Amino acid sequence: MRFSQSPVLFASLSSLHSSLALSSYGSNATCSGNATVDLSWHAPAQTNVNSLSSAINGTGVYGFIFNSSQGPLNTYNWCNMPHVNKEAYPRADSSYKLQYVEVIHRHHKRTPYAANTFPREQYAWYCSDEGLLYGGKPVNPAGNLSADTYWTVYTSPSNPLVPTGFNGTCQFPQITRGGLDDSHQHGADLKGVYHDLLHFLPSSYDAKAVSYRVTNNVITSQVASMLTVGMWPTLSKKDTPLLIQPASIDSLEPAYTCSAGSALFSSYGVGSTKAAWQAHLTASAPLFSRLDALSGISPNSTDWHKSYDHYFDNLSARLCHDKALPCNINNTADCVSQAEASEVFRLGEYEYSFIYRDSPQSLQASTASYGIWIAELAQNFRHAAGLGLPAITGSDSVKYRHNVAHDGSISRLLSILQLEKMVWPGMGSEVVFELYTKEKCFFVRVLWGGQILKSSHPALGLMDMVPLGTLLAYFDGLVGVGAMTRTHKVTDRDHVGLANGTAAAEEHLPRYFGKAGRSGDDPAGTKKQGNGKGNWGKDGMSELEDYDYNPAKPRRRTNSMSSAAGHNLFKS
Image 1 (spheres, rainbow, N blue to C red):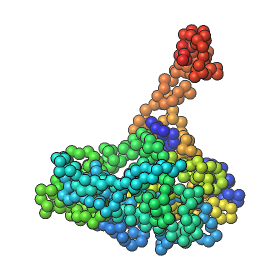
Image 2 (image 1 turned 60 degrees about the vertical axis):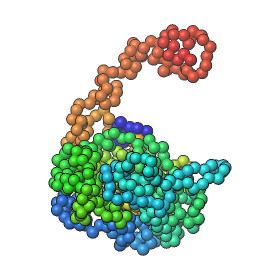
Image 3 (image 1 turned 45 degrees about the horizontal axis):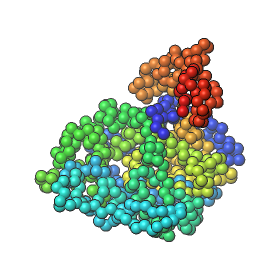
Image 4 (image 1 turned 180 degrees about the vertical axis):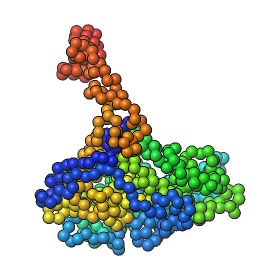
């Protein structure tokens, strides 16, 4: 499913509202929530994170942790973000009954991506303390047994080529031994809350009640293999299915093509020449120059200088794994200082807040590129409330769904929820949706980092028992039921966006308004290209559309299959 223009939301959302009949979300007349939900972007709170002055001139990283998986509960920890756990879990009032849970979180800590390593690294990175299993086995029905095979990276003295980036025995990326252990603990913590504390999950794994989903990036499967056993120890060495969508349409990562969403992001964010985006890059130019000279990265490399993503990944991955900050390969006394690394981290945090929350276009861009997953989530809510089928066929009895995703997944979700204080989602960052009932009404509670999420949207606010009807009205207004609702005519311009300055650059161009075609079509064009009397089409050809011919059915060579009247088009 590849869209040159997404089937959702390409009007400016700033003046739109979603009006739905919401009385079906419970039998009580008070269940409906807000019948009209504002669909506009609401600015986040002003904090040090989204302050350019703090990013450039500040010190440290606002008390955030970048050098260990261990840290105080409820403290931002890039290496291992806070998540649901028994010690800090905010219990709901006992008058509410938990009905359904859906978890989505980023994978746990890993080696950096190969593209984010320096041309020559000062030291090697070894991963011989773990095995990444790759293989297959016959199932359904079972057949010959298979071995637990895993890759062991090596270099050969007979191969004169030197690998770029880190030498050693790791893949770049791969979940590290520390990341695997964090994944296991994450699973144990979730089980501790939803089984031990709330008695919601069964004591043993039940595939009819619980499901796990991953993306096409193998690191999410590496996390899931540990997390599932952390939740269900009896799954060790057991066959455990992980749901995955085809790579071309994967909504969880997301991996489906949405050129309109990509164009929106690049119009104001990474790669943009707009002054608002360029301001922090210009102000931090001396830091770029310093890092380039030390790392060997070309000052002309666009990928390394259109944002701080590459340097951020490179430096943070080292610190999370207790490795030294890099030094100049030709002068090992000249190293990146902690103050310089902290400035990179402040700038990275600033960028994510700017891209996903501070820019007025962020809601529209995030909804375009993550709207399908939002529609799937909404459908799961509907099913749990007894209002339709689940988003996944054959999962009618599932009451706990778990998604292992990426920072781009979590960032877009937080953008759509309009998180009040945006940060870059670190390793293991988690959002939990809990559906409750009370007096035959349905309510949703959303947890971010194990605590109740606070949204800038006035209808959502502190997302503690938001009426299901309100949340679904918001989701449906943005993406439509099944992610297929347009919010304005594609043949018309974004007039509201033109008025408030949020419209895309091409929106000032005129559109054709006739019913004859889509945006850009010839206004004089008509059905069947206007051929034939009364616009009936070309003789002998267009009328075939009006009859129930079956061109796939073999026929003997009669006149009806001759070239007369254009019928040779269907000749078999």
